[in-house]
Length: 286
Image (cartoon, rainbow, N blue to C red; front, side, top):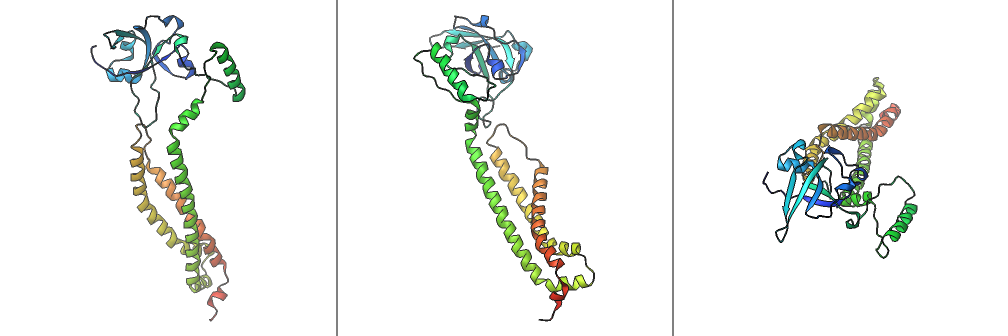
């Protein structure tokens, strides 16, 4: 097959698959015997996107030789011995690109990734530094945690989420205060009506529903207006990500149900209080 495909690559060893928990879909993993002193020939593992880009199957890929021309006319041959599952090497806003890893000698690998199960990280780092100093005297020992590096990629999104969450809580609190104040005002305005209805046999539940109904209708109306706007803005934000979730309709139903419940509970406190009041006091002549 004679076609040009841009493939990013990295140097690694036979522990790449197991250390990073990469799923091998076809072919085999590296072995120490695959290491070659001839830089122009190498064994490689490629991701699924390479096959999709080149429109070849996993079976066809095994044993296929990829060629790359370097400056000076030198040609490098990469023999595919395995295919691994697509994994993200960058942020989720970036599409997964063709990627391959080639085996190299240990002395040609400047970095080490360790998969550890200990919880005593200071002790592990101290031990790792000691081993590093023994193996590479004079070379600086620098380390980082992979999970922290990944989290750093999404620091902006996390900050944005925290800000939105804080303002949401503040908005809910202020809204509840407003609803409570309006319910008190409405109950005072309809005190005589409540007294008459209670004398005529109206139950506490029916009176509570009567007072809360108007507020709940307003909340439902506001949800109907806000939901399309929220859906549009969320989809606008998610467009920045190559891999994203789909906003389902039930999310708005759930959010709306919670909003109605919070509004009802807020209003019901004053409504129940007004419904339980002695009707004689409401009907007493001023």
